[in-house]
Length: 385
Ligand SMILES: [Zn+2]
Image (tube, rainbow, N blue to C red; front, side, top):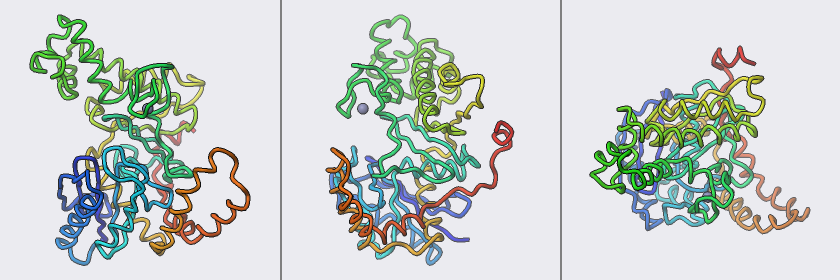
C-alpha cells in the first residue's frame, strides 16, 4: 500500500491529508492560510507536509497540491489566484525548494473532480463535469478519463459565461455572468432581496437570520427550505433553474455522462437538484431523443481537494519519471510570453521554437496525464449508449 499527501490550498485555510490508494484519508490537519504573503503561504504548505511526512515515515511516495487559482499548463506556476497573493507565482519550485521533494500542482476544482471520478459521486464515469457552487462557480472537465485543462491551463470557467445581457455586475468586470445567478452568493442575494421586498412572506428566513435580511445566510436558507418554508424553496427553485439551464448549455458543448454538483449549496441535495433537473430537461437540445446526463451531488465534500491532489500525484509518480524543475520553469517562461500572440495568429517560427524548447516538459506532462481506467462504467450508461 503506497500513501500520498494531498494539500488543498484555499483563501482561508490550508488542509492537508495522508491518503491511501482507495482514497481514504488516514491523517489530516488544517492551518489558516497567511493569504497576504506568497512566501508564508508556501511555508504553511511545506510545514503541513513535513508534519504529515513525520507521522508516516517512508511510506509517502507522492505529494500533490490543489490550489485555488489559475494553474499554468505546465502545472508549475499559479498565474493568478483571486483570494491569495499569488501572481505568476512559481509554486511548484518554491515548495520543492522548501521540502527537497517533488510536488505536483493542480487547480483545486480539477483535483476535486478527479477525486469524485475516482472515489465519489461520479465513480466509473469518464466523461463528466464538476460544477461547484460557492462564492462563485468552480468547475472542472474530464474527457475520456483525463482532466481537460485547455492550452493555457484555464479551461473550465463556465461561471463567467454571460447568461443575461447587461445583467448583474460580476467580480470579473463583466455583466450577467452565470455565477451571478447560480452560486451560493446568488442564493443568499435572492433570499435577502425577497426578505427586503416582502418581509411578511419571509418570516421564517428573517427569524432564522436574527430579524434582518443581512442575517440570512446559505445554511439559514437550506434549513428553512428543509422545513418546507415556501420563500426558501422559491430561492432554490430560482437558483436550481439557472443551474439546470446552464448545465444544458454545457451539455450542448461537452455531452458529458454526468454532472457532479459540489460546493456549499449542494448540501441542500434534491431541494436544489430537482428544479435543476427539470430545467435541464426543458432546455436540453434534442430532448427526448438523447440519453440524459446524470446530475448528482458531490460525495466527498471538503475532503475532495485533498483526496484528488494526493491521488493525482500518486498516479503521476507511477506513470513516468517526473520532469525536472528546470524544464518546468523554461516552459512557464515561454507560456507567460505567449498570450501576446492571442491578438493574432502565432508566427510559425515562434511556434516551432516554443514547441521544441518546451519538449522535455511536454513529454513529462503527457506521461503524467493520468486517466481514469475504462473498467467500471456504470451499467445504466452502458445501456443508454
Ligand atoms: Zn464574471
